[in-house]
Structures are given as C-alpha cells and as structure tokens.
Image (cartoon, rainbow, N blue to C red; front, top):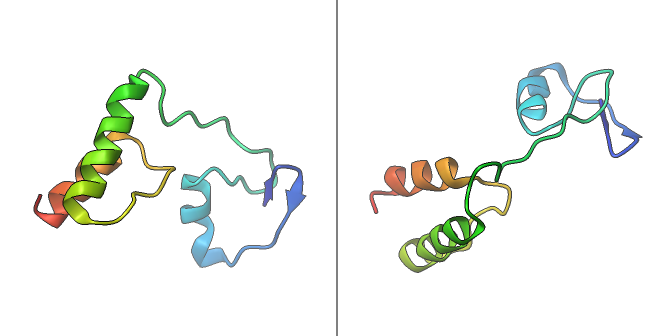
Amino acid sequence: MTKNGETLGVHSTCVEDHERNGWVIGGELRDLDDTAGVNEGDLSALRADYLAKLGKKPFPGWDVDELRRRMVEAGV
C-alpha cells in the first residue's frame, strides 16, 4: 500500500478500512475531498456543535455526514 510515496505493508484484514481512508493497494493515493460541495462555514459550525455537545473534538477527517451520524449515535 502506498500513501504520499511511502510504501507500507498492511494486514489483509485491514485492507478495506485502509482503502476507505485513502490507501490504495499497489497504486497511488486516491484524491479524496471530504468537503466537496460543503460550505466550509457549515463544517466549522458542525465541528463546534460536536465539541459543545459531546465535550471532545471531532476527528478532523470527518465530513459533515460523518459528524451528523456520530452525533445521532451519541443521542445529541
């Protein structure tokens, strides 16, 4: 698997997770733009809301849909 020109070995059970996060087996890193079509202000406001309601910072790689899903799971 490669990312930023660095080649690393990954256990076969982790391949799906790594591919979802942008790692590609035997290839180059896919261009993932989590904020495509999303107003940056909306994402910032949702991150601030997550912090206020859950008391912890959200993972910076989460997009709007993931933040909303996690807030729903937490019951807020």
